[in-house]
Amino acid sequence: MKFSHAVTGAAILLALTGCQRTSYSSMNAANSALPPLQAQPVPSVQSGQLPPPGAAGSAQFPAAPTTTTAALDPAAGAPATALDVTKESMVGNWRVQSAGSSCDMFLTLTNLGSGSRGGTRGCAGELTAMGSWEVSGKSVVLKDRNGNTIGSLYKTADARFDGSTASGQPVSLSR
Image 1 (cartoon, rainbow, N blue to C red):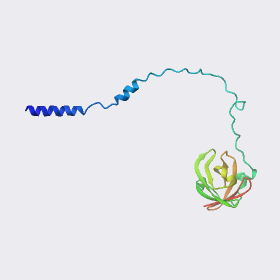
Image 2: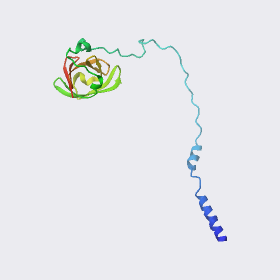
Image 3: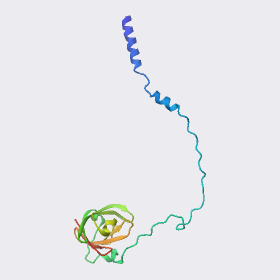
Image 4: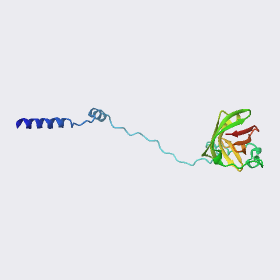
């Protein structure tokens, strides 16, 4: 009986030795040796009136976007034979033909300013600056990243748009 009590006691001691604390006491000791941080001086706060907008020393803002040419007026740009166009029908990838070369145009419904985000890949000339687009009446107006009109197109067939850039270069979109 004494043997079974000894085995039980040894088993309990062995189990208790497995329940030791496992914290990293060496790290805690190293951290406690660091001195506390000292307070640092803070500069005084200044107050005063800001200069009026546009005054010397104030931030300058870019001018509002302007239409490059009157010929790109969306209302005047679409001929009477132009087909109706919706924003949703424009979304996606388009193949662009302009100035004898071809490139890609991507149109999304993501808002960007007054229009929607768009862009080109592999294009030359004014179309390289395209950043947004919008539908205005029967025209699709292409704009640069500053909101200036760089081209205007109108629907001529089910999957085709024709128009011109601000400099007068013909532009065609097709799928």
